[in-house]
Image 1: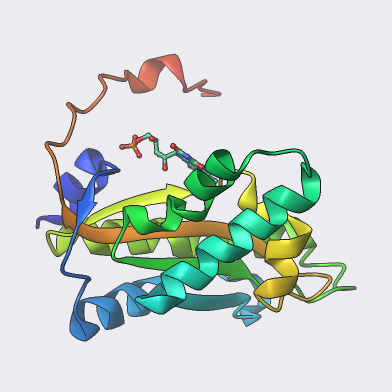
Image 2: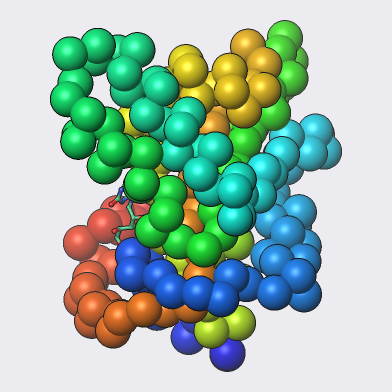
Length: 186
Ligand SMILES: Cc1cc2nc3c(=O)[nH]c(=O)nc-3n(C[C@H](O)[C@H](O)[C@H](O)COP(=O)(O)O)c2cc1C
């Protein structure tokens, strides 16, 4: 896909079907992520890939986190949370692996770099005909989920990228006029 068209026309796809992206497609996603801008070359990125039973284990963590916050939640609600990761055949958690105490690269810059990595992965997915959706919900910030995924004190979950084959039609691209967002100092 032509580069400018991809940048202008990227769309999320929430409805995802199997099969999961191939190893080659995933490798292309990671290579795109690893070209994210990166102040001081800290490479502040870590990825966890979930498929098959891994998706079920992620769902368990989501449900466990929710139950901890909300002990009165009924079983059917909890079950719907448990099933959330099943909306895609493959999920990649994008994690900003934080290096503390760097005055020139504060934590926010490391999180931004991981955000750029996630965006690059969305673009690389669309370029290969895959569907992709960036989700966080409340789960990215949940202490049970953080612990279950082995996050350190300075790490942040930036994205759960839901990936698969597009299972529906892409909605139209919203019309946005750059002039409404840009101020010029000539
Ligand atoms: C940090 C971040 C977290 C997001 N989390 C969610 C989410 O949990 N659920 C959701 O429906 N959309 C979420 N979105 C928005 C979608 O990924 C998507 O961008 C939005 O539906 C607009 O579609 P588009 O990307 O095609 O413009 C999130 C986006 C970002 C940048």
